[in-house]
Each structure stands twice: as structure tokens, then as C-alpha cells.
Image (cartoon, rainbow, N blue to C red; front, side):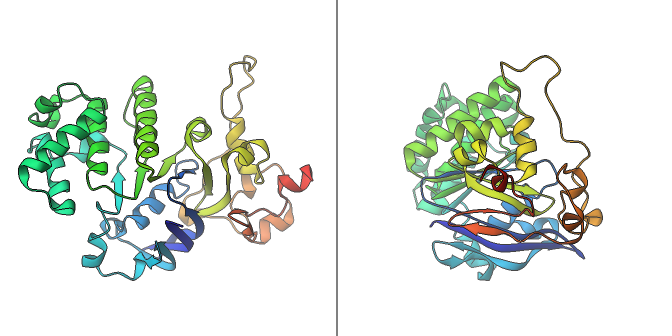
Amino acid sequence: MLLGVDTLSVSIGGAMPLEGIRFDIRKGEIVGIVGESGSGKSLTALAITGLLPLIGGRVSAGSISFEGTDLTKLSPRERRAYNGRRIGFITQNPMTALDPLQRIGEQVDVVSRLHLGLPPHAARARTVELFRQMRIAAPEAIAEAYPHQLSGGMKQRVVIAMALAGEPDLIVADEPTTALDVTVQAQIIHLLAEEVRNRHIALMMITHDMSIVAQLCDRVAVLYAGRVAEVSDVRALFAHPAHPYTRALIDCIPRPDMARGALTGIPGAVPAVADYPSGCRFHPRCPRATDLCRTQVPALVTDGRDSHACHHSLRDTHG
């Protein structure tokens, strides 16, 4: 196991927006972290990358094990040895991920120099080669350009190259195509997946798009209102989801054979942290909810690497 997240809880001020998160990632796997906005996906990414203090957050319980080392127990200095070198991070918005006052090449060079110990000329050669792998035309010229001279899609390719420059074992990608148009999104997502497969490294893909999960991921962790709803192999999850929330997300995927007006949505919205309901947090939106769901928190039932938290599992219905 490369990464193991075990009963992770995160506190910000007096609130606990993330509670009891549990999943793992093996080498070479692409694992999707999915859920609507407000489900806790980005907070999970910030916890794994050690960036919670930037938003006033902290890990209040649980552990994040990276090849047997609990990252939550490390000092800030010890943690910096993992970020960039062992764990790469791709943020949501490529427009703000790059320093507007530095040339593109310099910003990528520094990763190879810091984490791999390469001299300046070797670091630049590596940057140019990474740009070629990202299918960036005229990579030498792009290395000399400033961020404002690049399109959004080109900037995202640069940010992916930067995440790969330290030769990490895991890349955490937090909705990496949110700010891009649909056609560019598809190109970037498939390019990223291709690169991690070629390098046999792991990818944690945070997204709200279940169609991306279906196409690219090996496993999926579904989050809702700061808790795990379900973790499963991607094929099993789409064939027989255990949690009604997972079923609802799948039903939101448009299909070519779908009749006009047949696309459904999930009524209501993910509650704010201050308004988390008692019992199962999905019960106000769940068509299967009973009094048990409204009053008792469902246990996270584990079967091997799979798990779900529902009093009335859909898999019980399927037998």
C-alpha cells in the first residue's frame, strides 16, 4: 500500500468538516475522490499534502500513512521532504498556480534542482523534455515565456509537468480542469492519466464528474458532507452501488440513449458544516431514509478494501 488514510478527521476553528475518512491507494492505481461541492474532497487533498495550515485547519484525529510513515506525525521540515518529491500536487486553477513574475521554465526547473539535485543546465533539459511529454509545441520557447503568454490549457500542461518534475510516487490532482473549457478538459485529463500509467505512479483524482471516474479510475471513494459514503472498485460501484448517494450521482450522468427530459438531479444541496444533520447526513435528500437514518450514524462497514456507510444498503436489495 502506498497511501493509507485511516479515520481521518479535520478541524477548522470549532468545526469538523471532515470526519472518519478512510481509503487507501496502491502503487500504479488511479483512485477517484468524488462528490458534490462541499463534500470534503479538497480538504482531503489539503490534508494529504500537508497544506491545511494555509486555511487554518489541522488534522484532529486519524492518520495518513505513506509507505508506513504517518505524515501527520512529521514536523513541517520533515513533511517538506515529501511534498514535491514523493507527493506531487496539481491545484484547481492553473491561472493562479504559476508566479506571473517568473519565466515558466524557471518555475519548473526549481523542482528538479530542489528534489533531484540537478544542476541548472540539467534541470532545464529535464523541463524541456517534460514539456515535450506534455505535448507542448516549441518547448524551449515556452520555457522562456511568462504565464500571461500562455492559454489556460497550456498553463495546466505546465502545472502537470511541474508535478511530475520531482519524480513523485503519488500525484494528488484537485479538480485540475475546473477552469478550462470542455474540449481542453478532456485532453488534459487523458494526458494526465496516460502519463501516470506510463510512469506506474499513483494518481488521486478529485472530481465531481462521475463520467471521468468511469473512464479513468480503478477505484472510487465517494464522500458526502465530510464523511465516506462508499469506497469500491470502479466496475462494482457502477454495476451495483451500495449507497443511495452513489446511485443518485450515477443517475446524473447523461447517456446518448437517454430520452429528452429524462436526466435527473439530486434534490436539495450538501449541507454546510454548521448544518450537518443528525444520523446519516444524506437522509434529508434520500428516498430510502427511515427514522433509523435520521437518528443513528451508519457505521462504515468494511469488506476487504471496499466499504460503505448506509443502514439500507442497495447491495442488500440486490442480494
